[in-house]
Amino acid sequence: MRTQVGIVGAGPAGLLLSHILHLNGIESVIVESRSREEIEKTIRAGVLEQSTVDLMTEIGAGERMKREGFVHGGFELRFGGRGHRIDLQDLTNGRKITVYPQHEVLKDLIALRLRTGGQVHFEAKATGIDGLSSDQPVIRFTTKDGETRELSCDFVAGCDGGYGTSRAAIPEHLVRRDYFRVYPFGWFGILAKAPPSSEELIYAHHERGFALISTRSPDVQRMYFQCDPADNIDNWSDDRIWNELQTRVGGDGFELKTGAIFQKGIIPLRSFVCEPMQHGRLFLAGDAAHSVPPTGAKGLNLAAADVHVLARALTSYYSSRSTELLDAYSPTALRRVWRAQHFSWWMTSMLHRFHEGTEFDLKRQLAELELVASSRAAATTLAENYVGLPLA
Ligand code: DHB
Image 1 (cartoon, protein in one colour):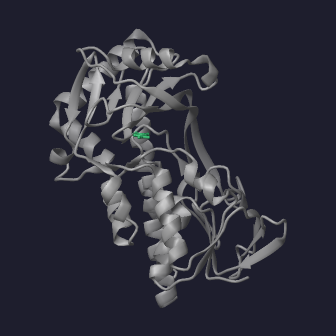
Image 2: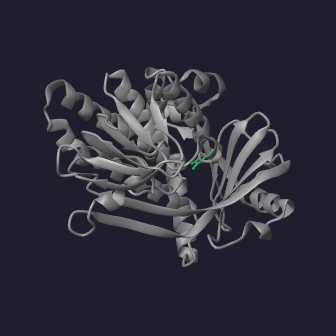
């Protein structure tokens, strides 16, 4: 089997890349270990930056997002028992975010890719990538029927997430360096059948820990609260969850609207970057190269930004045979990655309680939140990063 760009992984990065390449007349094949159903039902975060929305729209994948997504012009920071609105639109010349969950983005991209003749091999496990320093690298994979196949290509895009095989094809220490930080807490996430408690998202700081109130639809709400990453969902009855959330977001009479909780899960928080994001003919994009803690919702948006840079570089190569943009891919993508790393770490540190945190740290966090809530300059820094930097 042969193609121009072999893509490992049908997550947001792989699907977006495949479709943008298609629009530019470049052929690709995607090899994905999970089934289509599994991808489409995995629950993930849900905030799209303005530039991700623009990119989806531009490539013809924005129709349902426009119809069903919720556009928010601001969000609320709650601390010290009070809410403070961050007016994103006003602070960023009209930029906004859209609440539209990642698995809906994936459904739209998979449908679009298949409708436009895309080749996606589901339940096909990549077992190795060879020949990265030649001009015909090969992706070896096993199909769902257990057959061994080889996909030879001009370039390999490693879009297979944090636990995929692509990153391992870049020799550690010799070439690749990993930078990471593990946080001493996780997020307990729920989906509940309930009406929205607020028109906009709420990011809450409380001495018992962080909480986030988000939404999915007029009758399904998504909420999270900081927890011990080693905790077990069975320790949390619905009552205990609602009490904890209410305590963390309450204060000035604000009451959460509760309802039946139908999904519970604990996610760990970590910051991770691998450098470089390229080795020979392999280019990593999205979670294969980096992950951010979810505070600030940068994960999916960062994947889209990588793909924007990579697709442009590949398109330039096929039209001119110049490798200039491909050679610049890793440093170009990493600049945005580290900006997003800083922002996600900052939001996380400002809003969460750390085990080792002292009373001093608590007061310092409150002073920092006060600064963001009262200084237009500080709020602008937050807002610009939250709505997302323009694409490079
Ligand atoms: C959601 C997730 C986030 O990490 C965030 O910062 C905002 C919203 C969500 O799942 O809705």
